[in-house]
Length: 166
Image (cartoon, rainbow, N blue to C red):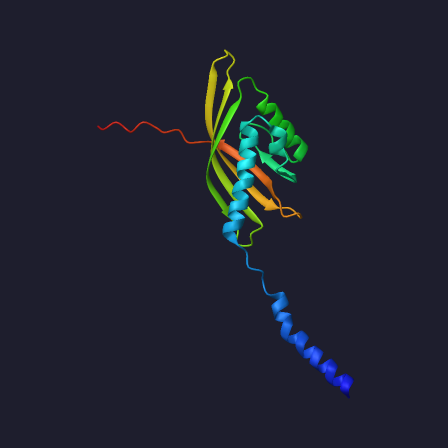
């Protein structure tokens, strides 16, 4: 009889505590956004310092890179090779101005958007500069580290002259 009461009491405790064990864990979105912003800055600094291998280390193994002027790259190695070739262009310089860093409510994915200014030497040796908008989609890996799963960019819009009045 005592054994049955103890089993019954234990069962009641389990039933009472079960919802607490299944409750969602609160995510500190400010901390996650700060953490993602640090990963974004690490990528940007690596490319700006001409260390494409360090930038590529922030790619997920199954990254997809979609340049606006090249084929789609679907492996980390192909993406790293592309970054290295890009950084190896004569006169290559790049700067980033990140203006959006957002994290999903789950805290395990997010995105960043930057204005990127690239300069390379043209065929005549004169510098050519162009501006792009760069979008990275990020996810946390099994170790909780932010990794880029999708990297794409396109030309930033060019300011047009105002229309002439009639």
